[in-house]
Length: 154
Image 1: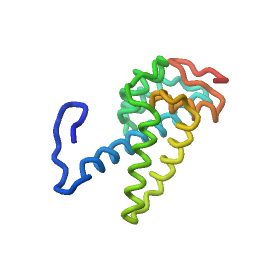
Image 2: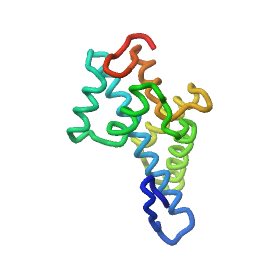
Image 3: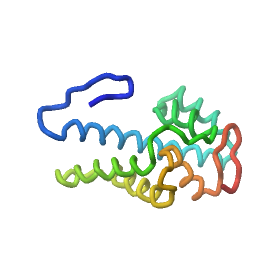
Image 4: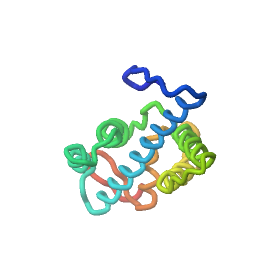
């Protein structure tokens, strides 16, 4: 299985193990995007600036690729152009949870993440970028996370 830095990993000897590693990675990424969305939106409802929160998260134990790269680059400037469609992320999360179910393995947190991504995909445009997941959390809270200032009413 390849990664973004062109490192190649040899994953097991059985067919499908590389695919499983890929969807597990995407489950982790989807979870990071979802919880970062919720954290920034809650902060916005309290009047906290999104960039300041990201700086705090990235200096602390909350750092992840959503806080360090995706939100500063694609969400705050509202470009929503990371290059990975929201529908594909929802599909990968579902594939991961289907594999867990087929193995009789409970993933309660993963199941909640899967439900959120399914809902986001149902509400988003077909070509929406996965960073647009934040719009679901914004809609629920009635605030918009944009750059340095949160705006009410997206």
